[in-house]
Image 1 (cartoon, rainbow over the protein chains, first blue to last red):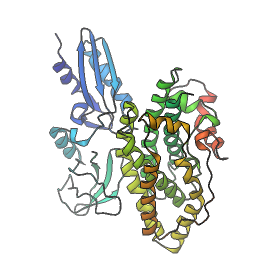
Image 2 (cartoon, chains in turn cyan, yellow):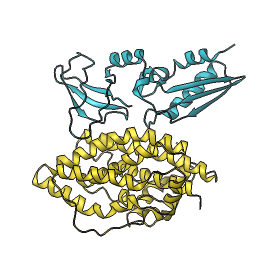
Image 3 (cartoon, rainbow over the protein chains, first blue to last red):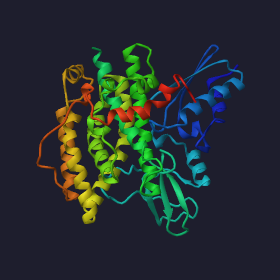
Image 4 (cartoon, helix red, strand yellow):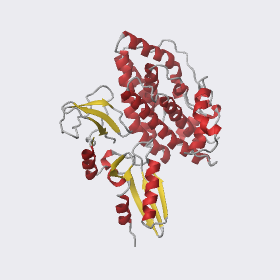
Length: 161
Length: 249
């Protein structure tokens, strides 16, 4: 008999199509799983409103659970409570760093005008001597940084609260 | 009239049309980083539009989904403010338009996230986080350009002179807003205006640019009365669905 806990484990195998080292569980995109006889309801939330990966994540969830023998799978998208980088798991943070993406520092860059941007250590050489190139990076959830010491250009998974 | 639909479609169309305008920059940004920034902002706005349009479709109850509302209405049925449909112009014009809009959207969403309408509150809560990043970006550029060279100062001042007349349209309020406010759904626009005004005054002072003394204003967007640019936007936005109805990819 499949339990809700099993389903959470199965969904560890569904990755974010844009950051394949992270599962949707690591990312905090998977919010709830409900089993009700033969029916499985999965609730997910987007990182950013326009996140183009959501449709693909939905399809992958359905495929994964069907592969595990669940027949009636529905996926709901909820917006509230709004996703925050606080939901990124510790293992998710480590996976990001190993992949070359700096995980979110625990502060939002909320200053409106020209304040110093968040200090983000380089994921390669760990130097704190880095600079923000642009608030907006390769995907909606990332900013673009460069390391002044090892010269590595890298993505920073920006903090969202 | 379904006032909740009407109110939601106004919110949706601001995001949709400005998102479309920003997407026109794709591949044309002055530098690569800025190209990426402009299109990131476009993506956030189109995402917000999708949420608002999907909800508008639900409240309408005529089985129109977000795509049907985005692609299959006529110009008079779009209720965006006139500001967001103005052409991109140069980079200064685009940044000024974005700044005037972001400075409006942030205080609006700060209040709308406490709306008695749960779905509008949820969309506002989500969108607010994105809007803060947009406002930081656009206000810094307005200051950098204004307090920059003679050339950049002249251009950003020209942008303000051109766009200022469209700002009252953002705060246009009629019986739709009144009813929504009475129901605790929409926020008090006077309070939103006060915050907006404080932000723009502060940023323009830093940017050493001045609000034009000419107070002539142009409104009409919320009633579907648009500028000459709207038809051109829709021709491009709707082309695929009009030419190949129901196509998907």
